[in-house]
Structures are given as structure tokens and as C-alpha cells.
Image (tube, rainbow, N blue to C red; front, side, top):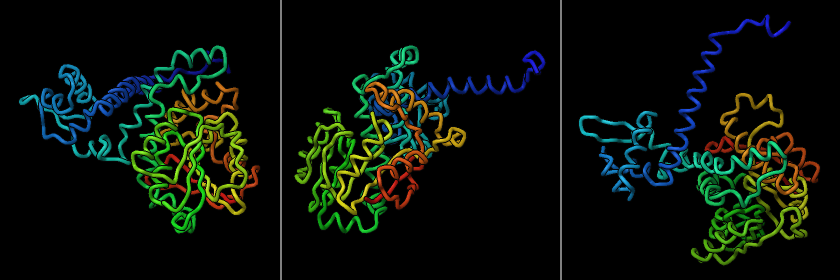
Amino acid sequence: MTMETIAFDERKAEVFAEKMFAVLDHGALALLTSVGHRTGLLDALGNLPPSTSTEIASDAGLDERYAREWLAGMFTAGVVEYEPSTAQYSLPAEHASFLTRAASPNNMAAFTQYIGMFGTVEDKIIECFENGGGVPYSEFTRFQETMAEDSGQTVLPVLIDKIVPLVDGLSDRLRQGIDVLDVGCGSGLALVLLAETFPNSRFIGVDISAEGLATGRNEAVRRDVTNIRFEQRDATKMWFDEQFDLVTTFDAVHDQKDPAAVVREIHRALRPGGTYLMQDIAASSKLENNRNLPLGTFLYAISTFHCMTVSLSDGGEGLGTMWGEEMAMEMLGKADFELLKVTKLEHDPQNNYYISQK
């Protein structure tokens, strides 16, 4: 059968055209939402009664003309409501419950920041499509800040009460005092919280980012947490030998230069019987299984614009965000880990939590 004999489906074309119109609107909405989050406009709307653009801009400490244009876009998107007779805008409580910092960990506005951030490296990504290679961490503006806020929603609010109890008896052991390593700790906020909560345990955070480590050190000093230190190390060559009872990674393995080497180094760092707790993306290694995955397109975009390319920039494997649980379990097995369980938390359907033992 030739292409000429295949009938052109006009209705299918119309449906797809409508989808692409929606893509343009939704892409624009993502950028406007990110602006609203970063400027505090969404938080202001969440706290104010119906108000004029002047009142909203004043509350947020912003220029009225920009705030008014932003409000117009958010009104046409159906996010903000507008009353013409009073020229007042309002954010329904049902919308605020997913768009304000007060709604954390359900604040979806925080995640829209990725769209604008990735736009800043689009030209460099295009060059990689043409020539290969990758874009290094240093090219991503605000990456550590955005990831810290991401972790602040998915990890920090539930770290002590939900994540730690995933490992049987871990809370008691941490209270008694053990040695803990967090690999790829970024800004170190999760580790600082653990160290603050469990003062009898000892904590080390390692990362390749000097910027992230500086944030962690400053936060530890600010909160007077002394049972913690941060070290700049290559996760594939940490050189720790059976020094830790617990190792954690939070969304930090798949974008490494050599993820398998990182997992082997984690195994090497653990004492016999030690525990490895890994949070990573809940996806399949088989593309066909991700067809209807919630946020699947978003996650592949994150992979293209960040996780895959930063690994390739360092001559790495470039596994990408969507490496999948099948590959993750295989990698843990090859590193001689005993996988005890893989589970999810209700607030975080995007991630798996792998509990393994040496």
C-alpha cells in the first residue's frame, strides 16, 4: 500500500490541530504560572480578597502594569477570576490549593519553573542535536535553587514521618546514632533536616556542585546543626570503605556520568547489613509502557533538556530521567544489593522508593 492510497482523515487532523492550539496556550500558561510563583503574585492572590491589579501589585511589591498583563493572561487561562464591574481579580480557593506556597507539597506552580529554565539552554540543546555532546550543569541558571524547592515539596515535608519509616527500625537506629551518607545531596536541605532531627547520628553529604554544598553548609550553620559535614566529591570515586550504616540518594542517580559506578560506590561505602534508600523516577525502561504515564511528556522533556544532556556533557552514559525501574533493579542487583522492596508514597506518584541492603 502506497501513501497515496491511504485516505486522509480530516477529523483526525482537526483533533490534532486543536491539540496543538492547546499546547501553545498551555505552554504560555506554564511560563505565566512560573512568573506568578517566582514573583509572589500567586501567593498574594491566595491571601487577598477580590482586589484590583493595583492592590495586588502593591501587596506583592511589583510594577502594576506588568501585574495587570499577567492577571489578564491568567484570567483567559481560567486560573484567575475577574469581575468587570469592579475591575477586581481573585484566585479561587480550589485553584490556590495547587498554586501557592501555602499549599505545599501540592504546589504545582513550583514545577512550572523548569519550563522557563530549560528555555535558557534551548539553543545549546539544539547544537547537541546537531553535533552530539551535552550541556553541563554550569549552563543551567537557578538549577540548584529550583531543585531545592522541588525537594522541599516531595522530600522535606514527609522525610521524617513517611520516608524514614519505609526502612524497618530506621527511626530508632537514627535516634540511637548511626553513620549516614547522602550522595548527590545538592543543597543538602534533606540531610540538614535529618541531622537536626537525629542529633546522635552523624551525617555526610557529597555532591559535585560547590554552589549546592555552600547552601547546605550555610543552612547547617544557620540552624546550629553540628553533626553534619559536606564534601565535594565525584560520586563515581568517593573512596569510602564500609563507613556508613545508611546511604540515601534523592533523584540523583540517573543523571550521573556513570550511574552503575555510583551504585557500586554506594555498596562499597556501606557496612555489611547497611541500607541503601534510593528515590528515583517511577517509570518503565520500556517506552511502550510509558505511553499513558502521568507527566510522561514533561519527564521526557526534563530528560532531554537536563538529565540526559548533563551526563553526556561529561562523556557519560546519558541514561536520562526515564531509565526506568527495570534498569534500576538490574543495576542494584549487579552491584550485589539485595532489593527488599520498591514502594511509592501517596503524595509523590512521580517517584519510586527502592529499599536495598548490602
